[in-house]
Structures are given as structure tokens and as C-alpha cells.
Length: 181
Ligand SMILES: Cc1cc2nc3c(=O)[nH]c(=O)nc-3n(C[C@H](O)[C@H](O)[C@H](O)COP(=O)(O)OP(=O)(O)OC[C@H]3O[C@@H](n4cnc5c(N)ncnc54)[C@H](O)[C@@H]3O)c2cc1C
Image (cartoon, protein in one colour):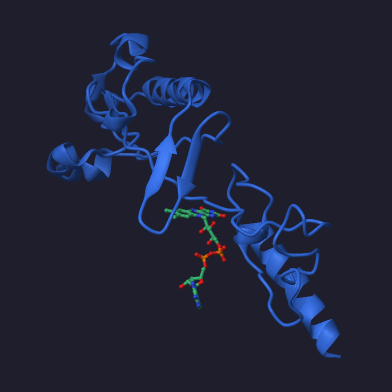
């Protein structure tokens, strides 16, 4: 965290485009945090022409709890203001009533949400009934077609996947090498 005097500190949670210039001018006094919410009751689907995502009430509530907690951490560290990435409350000044600023009924359209960990489009399992690839990453019904990345996860992990991605790559790679003799 940047070591600025508390009354001058501008710490942020996200950066809405409309306020970007002002925040960029204060960048050396900014810090940034992301909160990660694993889908529980949100739904979505991807087709060739459309991406749909519907934010569930439970997930929305968890998101707001997480944003509130992150904001409190920053205020406790001496921040004079936070930006939450939710259009509406905009900048929240230190001392402002957070629960009022982060309202549960805020529309998803007001939120700057993004997905960094979409996974599980070709899941791995023991049976071809419920999955696309077997435990070696081989596509069911094919001898020479494998998947060795996050698409084989049974679902999105909800945490950073880098190490697991490496592990899947190594495991599937070893299986391919074994078969090749
Ligand atoms: C903003 C952001 C921040 C992130 N931060 C972290 C982090 O801090 N820690 C962490 O662990 N994870 C992080 N992740 C997630 C992580 O980067 C991804 O989950 C991971 O890289 C996915 O690995 P992958 O191999 O499945 O896919 P990718 O890394 O996306 O690899 C897919 C590759 O396949 C190539 N490809 C696609 N289609 C084809 C094709 N038909 N033929 C040939 N090549 C093709 C693509 O060009 C790409 O290079 C972050 C993701 C984002 C978006």
C-alpha cells in the first residue's frame, strides 16, 4: 500500500471510466483491491452470438458484503475515499455510512463486474455421460485429441487457477507422452 499521509490518501477499489482522469492524476496515492465472488445462484450461458449472465440475489449480497469489507479495510488503513466500481455511490468519503452507499438493490447494470476465471467448458470426469474428457484429458471417443487447460475443470474454481492450470498441463502432457511410448 502506498505510504501517503492519511488525509491525502486516495485508495480505490475500482476505477469507473468517467472518473478515470481524476483518479489517474492521483495514481501515486492509490491502491487497488479486487473482490472475487464464486457463482452460487447466478446463471449464464454463452452461445455463438450472445453472452448472458444473470446475477443471483445471494451472489449480489456476497459481493456487497465483500465490497463493504474491502472499503472498511482501506478506511482503517487511513484512506480518505474509496471508489467501489458501482455507479451510483461513486466516491465514498471516509466516515460516510457504507451500508447506505452500497445498497443491496443496486441494479447489475450499475456494477463494473467482470469474469477473470471462466472455466469448465469441457469438463473432466470418469464417465462420458457427464463430461467431455477422461482423466488423461483425452476427448471421449477420440484417440488423439486432448484438452490440457482450465476448460477441463469441473466448474470455475472461485480462486486463482495458475498452479492448478500448470498441474493439469503437466498431468495431461505426461499421459500423452506415455501413450506415445
Ligand atoms: C484480468 C485477469 C487476471 C487474472 N489474474 C490471475 C492471477 O493473478 N492468478 C491466477 O492464477 N490466474 C489469474 N487469471 C486467470 C488465468 O489467467 C486463467 O484462468 C488461465 O490463464 C487460463 O488458462 P488456460 O490455459 O485455460 O487459458 P489461456 O491462458 O487463455 O490460454 C488459452 C490459449 O489458447 C490459445 N488458443 C485459444 N484458442 C485456440 C485455438 N483454436 N488454437 C490454438 N490456440 C488457441 C489462446 O490464444 C491462449 O493463448 C486472471 C485472468 C484475467 C483475465
